[in-house]
Length: 259
Image 1 (cartoon, rainbow, N blue to C red):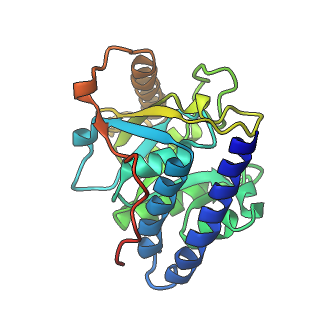
Image 2 (cartoon, rainbow, N blue to C red):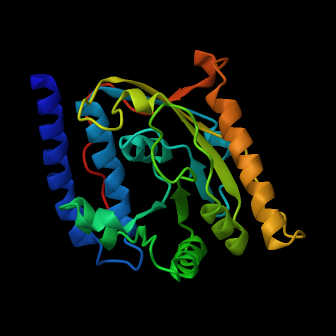
């Protein structure tokens, strides 16, 4: 218990430390891109103090000429620092429930860095989310969604909700499936047991929206393709060490980059 408490305390200190420059720099450009660059150093520091290693497969599949939508399975609250380390220098924002605003420090950081916070009880929320995501994509900033809607409780993939795919069809952005393997064991839902371990992040081939189909058909087709891609990778244990790129060092976290 002492080790777990020490890890939680260290994560809290890192969050407080990095929140100051993140908030201050957020006023220097329209989409807080300088602040967003700092978040990955927070993420790497969190992973380092918790002794979590992240390995990435398929980074070469990411389009370099435009922003995309990332659709990832959701195993743990630790998924965000894991994915931030995997994205490295890529500018990304997150679609998250608006309740995160109430989380001290973290909620404010998410607001000032233009994360998309969703009020799931609002009847007009879908239109607002599409507008916000489109603005980010037009600015060259990719967006991450968890199509399961919430973390899995038993380790199995949950049914994908259609909302994120409606956003994809409305914006026309390519969708990159992202598979997380092992993050559920780092921080299981329903507890505070932060454990060391290794996580794999697999970027799939980008999937294009069918622009010739009607919206409902295009949404359903995209959902099926993304769910199949993630499910297939999630159940695939055939990757060899030579296919995986380590991205999180086991040494001390990097110093702050110049912005």
